[in-house]
Length: 119
Image 1 (cartoon, helix red, strand yellow):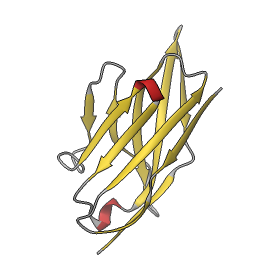
Image 2 (cartoon, rainbow, N blue to C red; image 1 turned 60 degrees about the vertical axis):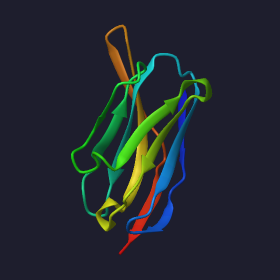
Image 3 (cartoon, rainbow, N blue to C red; image 1 turned 45 degrees about the horizontal axis):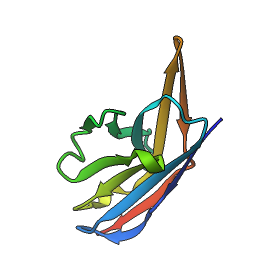
Image 4 (tube, rainbow, N blue to C red; image 1 turned 90 degrees about the vertical axis):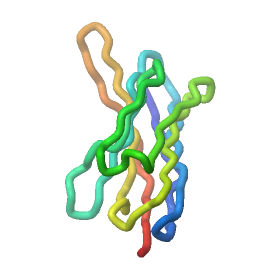
């Protein structure tokens, strides 16, 4: 069993910054990659950023240059540093971990953390 717990959301003015954390616990072996998604009201959940166990990263075009994903493997935690926030970044942010072992793939999700950016 894997647990992912996000934290760090909140209310911030446009142009501000927030740092989200996703702490993993439980049977976390072979959990890679880790990713951040977000879901705005009335919209589908969308992918934001991903990081592999080797440290490779990739970002959605909408956040490239403003958001940075990183990880602290010793603490089993993934971060999302969000700078130059815009009102359209308002959403519930979720982290997701994937395990692919023996041809089977399982995705694990956190409960989400609310980010609200005021104009």
